[in-house]
Image (spheres, rainbow, N blue to C red):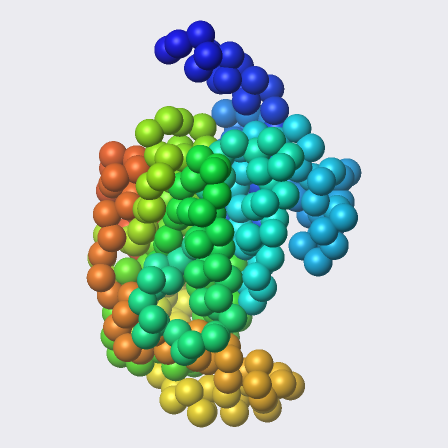
Length: 291
């Protein structure tokens, strides 16, 4: 290691690593790992000592002050990633690990203009065009969607009812996502890499529910709905019709089999195989996710 590299390492080890999205599924795991490893961490949130609000750019400088490394979970449905990255570079940030998503480079993955795609497309473009050291993480669907995310209520009800069809998806454990993010934040050799992450096997939603049933000891079924039927059920539950259909459209790549392929990002980044869905289900059940 050169004298310059040694000085840079010493400097960054004393500066807080900013975790934007630090209370979410991946962010809180990243923050916990960094803290356990002895790295100073600053979690960006509106209730933090330095309040951070995506929609209030005047809060960004205080959150970024002194930061050299950044884990960035973008705000869904916005084009704010680019402006934030520009502000980060001006504040002295050197390295960014961006959470994106598989399918971002597939124009047929989501309908043109869908907010779920816009945030990732524009975010990746802004990061690649910057002078920052960058790593992009593109995970498949999180396994934790079934235990602590937007599908958890359906699982707890005993009948997951979504327009997911009968195709399979290579669900990825958020524990793996966090491990890759921490490696990219704290180690050299990941700069300029795009890691597409998946689990070790693709499962249909019926198979995923069978794994959860076995782990939890409670029968959970899966009912594939059409997009129109799913939208109607959400509207009956009080959703705005446009929001309900937009949500349903975000799930349709599952039905079209666009997430069935396996990716080697976990192996490339960490030198090990990804965790299985069965391991996720066992851990989630032990933690009382579906109790």
